[in-house]
Length: 79
Image 1: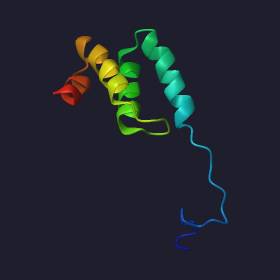
Image 2: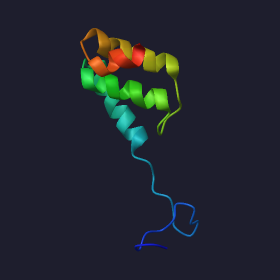
Image 3: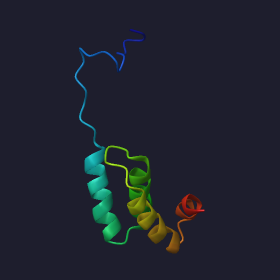
């Protein structure tokens, strides 16, 4: 133990539930409503499989919508 922190490999400390599935749900609702930043963020989560199952086809869909709306980071991800 260093600086009072525990190692993630320490099985005696229960894992905290990941907030990412709930965040992905919120991004999906906002993305479906046309929020360009949410479209990009949802694409990112889907592309990386962060807290949810990785889905490249869905990621491309959301990156594409954000890119068409002018989100440069989404355009970069599609290049």
